[in-house]
Image (cartoon, rainbow, N blue to C red; front, side, top):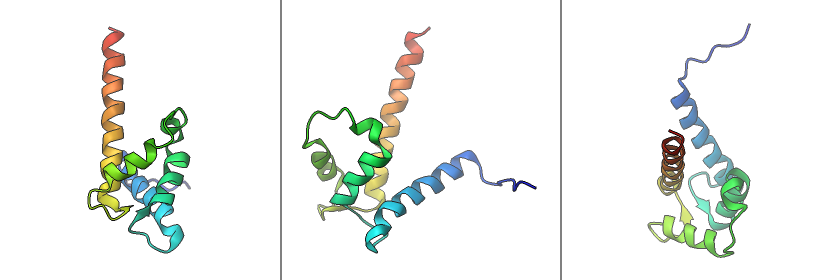
Length: 103
């Protein structure tokens, strides 16, 4: 019999974000920080649709620096969530504009 998940869709999304963060930070034995090299891998593998049309080779480096609020050269989970939140807001705004223009 198939196991019925008691988690809501929102709870599954939260679990997925945590799992993706840990997947990319845990590779070097530190599952609390996303170092620059790991950030670049994360962006290219998990968010390839956002980075594939990137024409500026230094864009991701500048993004990392902007997200790195404590300037320690790595992203903690809160800084990672700032990235995710910004992307979600941008997608939401784009969705709203598309649906408004279709009316």
